[in-house]
Amino acid sequence: MEWTILGAGALGCVMTGLLRQQGESVALMLSERHRGHFHPHLEFIDITGQRQLFHSRPIFAEHANTVQCLLVFTKAYHVIDALKELTLLPSATPIILLHNGMGVAEQVLALFPNNPILAGISSHGAMKERDWQVRHTGKGDTWLGPLNEAAKAYQHLVPPLAAAWGHCEWSNEIILQQQQKLAINAVINPLTACHNITNGQLLESRFTEVLAQLSEEVHGVISRLQGNKAETLSEFRRRLHKVIELTACNYSSMHQDIAQGRSSENDYISGYILQHAHQHPVPVCQQLYQEIKKREQVIER
Ligand code: PAF
Image (cartoon, rainbow, N blue to C red):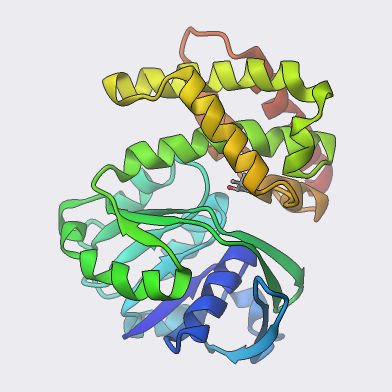
């Protein structure tokens, strides 16, 4: 079986490197802008600092009919445009969505009504050092689960991914887990991007108050969505602190996006919280959302 990775950003390339390290065959589905300057080798720097060059077969939208299993690492705001190009994708090909944030899957389900659609969450740390050179900055967990009926038969994808990625498990409550990850991202990502800090710096005393307020706002929204399946505020805060500690030296993905002059997943992270807050006030989340929007507008100009 050949895996196809769509989205050659930091995480997509790190997950490609880990699969190649395990001897899996991987094709990289590239966008038009890569056609002229694709480098045939991906330089993968593993967690111990060892460098390896991997060759991954580059393919483009016109090869979509050959795709056996599509792992989508494209940023949330590019997923729909990237998938719309794949008109030749066979209807039996499973599509696994691994972006941060939520609000995209509904459109993918409508666009590919016959394909098995899965969602995944992953907490691996990845950093792009330069074009086609990526560093694996933190080992993480990965969970996959079905978003439609057809996807329920795809549990067999998990063992080969677990062999390459270290941890990968099946979840029948993937939406719940996506919401829990989104809650973490809605605290860490905008704060680190706005203050230009690593995740670990959030533990400095100057952030104690904002961290307390934002975590309460985000927890309020997510727990109302999850009802009796929700974690308590103190459980959420414990989980949040653990993630901050485990990723202390990392720059969050939103920090990397803003610092490198790209759009961010703001609309799919803080935007998702604002959209589901309804009449409940979320002033800190709102302010951070607007601050990131302003920075994105400066980038777009
Ligand atoms: O988006 C990210 O950067 C990551 O999901 C996380 C967990 C915040 C670690 O940096």
